[in-house]
Image (cartoon, rainbow, N blue to C red):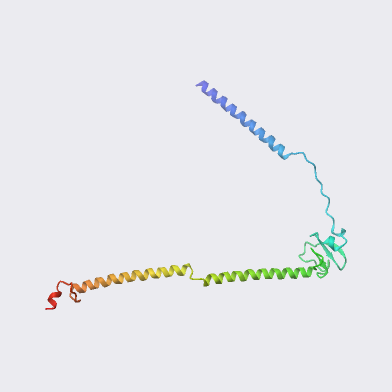
Length: 188
């Protein structure tokens, strides 16, 4: 019994050593992957918009706005959606491209957006109308099927009721029938 306890203790100690070695190896790999030798990279500060002297060099930068009234490049006023008149008139402002003034850009974007929205609404309406006129929908089909089933059961009950009534009429001799057992006495 003592030898069994000693072997279990030895196995547990070996497992603990293997676990400790695995944890140490994982820690070393993690440390090496996080701390790798490398060079610090510095970026140069961005060029201010006022450094650009013509429209062609100013407008490719999204943060810059060229004004033909003052012939200078300024920072686009990001707090405003449209640049205020104090910065530059819309007809004289250029952003993105030099050949299109800001006012025309806004109008053209509004027209394109309106056309896209209108076409989406028209397509949705056409699809809805086509779906409605294409045929009966599921509810109508289900109701028609249910009506047919009810009509068929009503016909079956009507036939059964007629058969019972005819049987009662034959029984009391109200219907002239050649198969009736008493019909031969009626003709004599």
